[in-house]
Amino acid sequence: MNKLMMCVMWLSLGNILAFFQLQGQFMDKLPEWVKSPWFVFAVGAPVGIMFWIATRLSYEHFGFFWNIRLMGFGLGTIIFGILTWSVLHQAPTLKTIICLLLAAAIVLIQITNVAE
Image (cartoon, rainbow, N blue to C red; front, side):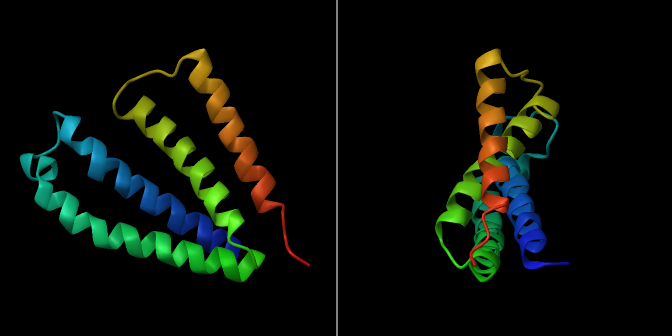
């Protein structure tokens, strides 16, 4: 697996875990320990390491720092939208759908921007 795919994988895992870390407090079907600040503390370090690894892989692939920032924003927005819709049952509005499409465009632009 190349560095870009590994970067996307670590970004995705980090964003999924961060979603449950932050929005878990509002989910009735999750156990109470997920809603505690201790869960936030416990998950914070692994999430930070996942983003750190993704940043390193992105820099090794692209040779620039801007790519990870924009790709991380776009991918995080897409993952948040999918999980909010599927887990929290909040359907996106037309305005939100347009923003998600723009986030997808940002990700696509960044993954095709390879330094020479």
